[in-house]
Length: 70
Image 1: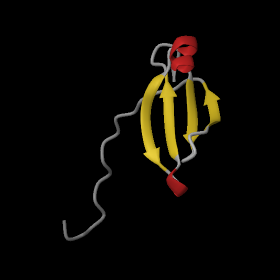
Image 2: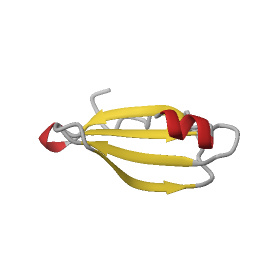
Image 3: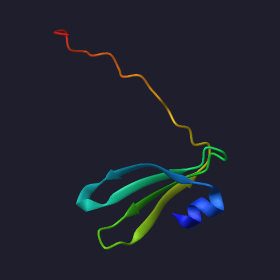
């Protein structure tokens, strides 16, 4: 996390629990658009999964319900 912050200006933007108690994290920089995805295993080892450019945060509206009862 320190290296992503100091070298690329990235901060954690999201986190989630995957299969087998693996923790997936997305780091990104709002200024440069760079992003990194990591997975941390229960053993504590962190694996870099992907990196890229042009990160954008989206605030999408909920899709309308398809339930005819609503």
